[in-house]
Amino acid sequence: MTDSALVHDDNRENRPHGTRPGRQAPLLRRQGALPHEAGEHGDVRPGDAIADAGSPIDTELSLLDAASAVVKLRETGDAARGFLGLDPVTQNDPLLAKHLSRMSAQVGQAGETVVGWAQNADQPRQAMLATTSDDADAVRAMVKFLATYQRCTSYVAMVPAGAEAEKAFTGSGFREIGVLPEHRYAGGTYHDVRVYFGRTEDTCPA
Amino acid sequence: MMLRGYRSADAALLTGPWLPGELLGLPVKDWPALAEPTTIRPPADYNEELGVAADVGFARFAELDWSHRRARVEIGLHGADQAEQLLKTAVHYAFTALALRRLHGWVTPALGEDTAILESAGFARETVIPDVLWFDGRPVAREIWGVVRHD
Image (tube, rainbow over all chains, first blue to last red; front, side, top):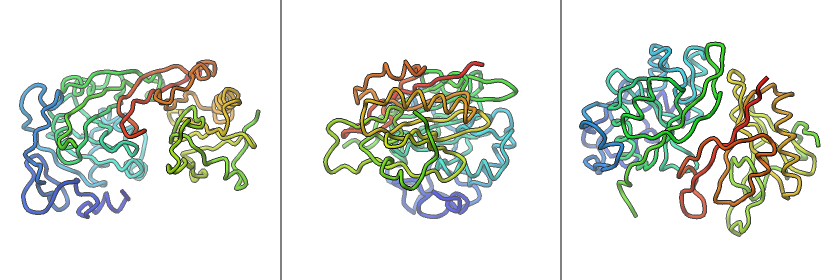
């Protein structure tokens, strides 16, 4: 995905796989661009530990273009530190946009929470996730979107130790699988990063 | 062993039967005859550094982050005999010449490589991430190994 694709996100490449024109997606609304349309698998339920954990998902997910994503992350401030490895407190807007583009990352908003994901280029059924709050429903909405429209089956999150986002992932069915010691620097010292992992069922098994 | 900067004459060292991004990039046994070998691109920007051990292999420092002083490291060798020396040289180069504080890298257990080499270079296993790489017709787990310089 290029910078222009992120900014002009109404092009074909930026449309979730498996979608087609016609209907409004139930969990998806785009800000600042054309709306995504529902796919033929829009009513598929992942039926997995993550999506079924806790209460039903009533959080609506909106996709943000690159410029809006950077603005939202900057407004979020400290809670966005470590978001997909970014740091809006110390990195300027062009650098944030460059890193998002380099990762082919997509940023969205679920309620007041900014969420983001980047698919694993070596295994496209897996995505790296990030969130800026302790809202587990925002993570569930993101996972359900990825399971339904991107056919992802596994998810990894690398969260700064002690961040609010840890509660969001543990509350939505993720489990901690390891710690990266002193992986990030902030506030004059080095901090651990915890790794979380979750799965959903394959929405379209072979 | 010393690492030096990349020259165009080193291009042949950058292609081989390794998994992409593998910390212990030794030639994979039974590499499929029709599979494309992995090719490392020459360094293109400040986010990566490539050290070459002449006629032996390379050590690549990718995802370099100068704020967090860390990098993901991978090596590539055409033979296994100098792996330990290259790895130790790479760690020393990163902690001294590049002034990094932490190195980490991917290790694929499905390859069955001996990880004692990693431990002797100071690395420790930090996590195992399932299904992170498509290999041999299925998703396989990969471990993250890391080393931190405490000074």
